[in-house]
Image (cartoon, rainbow, N blue to C red):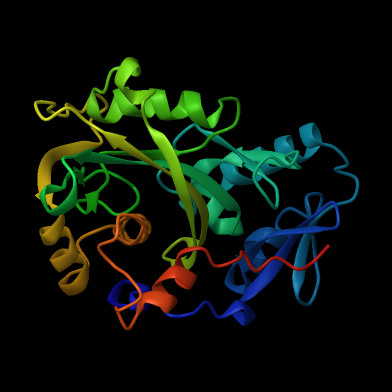
Length: 285
């Protein structure tokens, strides 16, 4: 349970609910009320919520208004780690987006973001090894921490499958023919308070068995090194350190359960299983 204690439970009293088209889609820190109030044509602020103005009645107008806000906040230093990637804003994967926004701004509004994760596996059973990457120092989130062999956000305009193939090449030099052998195995969720706001995520997890002689090769500068880690070393790392990015630690716990390295005889088993897929705390429609 060490990994689940890395972040305290979110105190939602510190946040305003973010409402778009009468739907609860995120959370904004109350400390940002002055920044929101600077855009009265975009936001209507109430006691417990901030809503996009009703006059912004469609995807295009809402997206344009949010782009204006985030550009101004970026200029003021409130938005960092700009990626030039547009993420959808909705309450669940596959739902029509109410607007889109720059990825770097999603934690400021507590928006549910989606991602794709690939476990790179070599061998099986007691001889199972996993390819582990180390994030570059310039990464805006979790620099220098341990990571998957491949993982990335899920932007608009590309399918999960095509995004997986793209990320496999960019992050580890995995050819499309091999990447397409990945198997969808599970999903994990998280809601944690970070420096910039609330990180809310739903991540699609894949297992990819790689050839014994495969060597990952990063193409986009986001990974500084790879190591092939024995499964027992992975277990010890998760038990004793916080070297893995938090969302990746959840993916690895999920893998250990699915592959039988953690089971009902572990006293934390039920809590671990429940903690991997906690519902996102949106208000009911």
